[in-house]
Amino acid sequence: MAMEIFEMARNLELEGKALYEKRAKVTKSENLKKVLNMIAKVEENHFDLFVEIQKNKKAGPIKHVDFKIAKQAFGVLRDEKFTNEEIKDFEKMLVVEKKSEDYYKLHANDVSANTELILEIAKEEHRHYVLIQNLIELLRRPKQWVESEEFKRLDNY
Image (cartoon, rainbow, N blue to C red):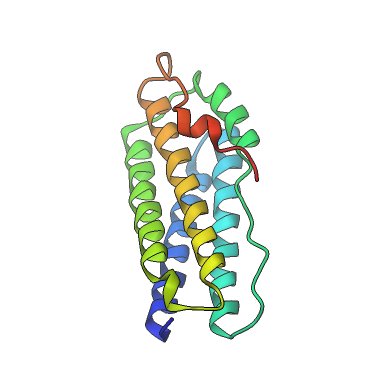
């Protein structure tokens, strides 16, 4: 990967981390705060991995979101109230997660030694996307929300 590709990857991770941390600081829900901080830590791990890859160091291991914790939190969130501003923040997170996933898939083959790791990071970004997508659906329609089939299958590795 060229220097600017690594810079873009690190910037995407920092952007995602900042969105999660910002929302975690202001949310009134302790359950949601726990999930958002967990994702922020995973984004920070991805940032660190890109730094290591760029320095030609052995990178790893990749951290994953614990979907068991997220699913438990979602069960409690049905009874909480959220604003349109909060939902808009989650929609921004969706955009960043999709952009990151697509970017990593596009450029993974640009690095021969780390292609698998970069594709694994892309896969984790997809997991974040599905989690946030389900969260938005839950917040919009808490009484009618049903987990998507994809969300049900995204257990820990």
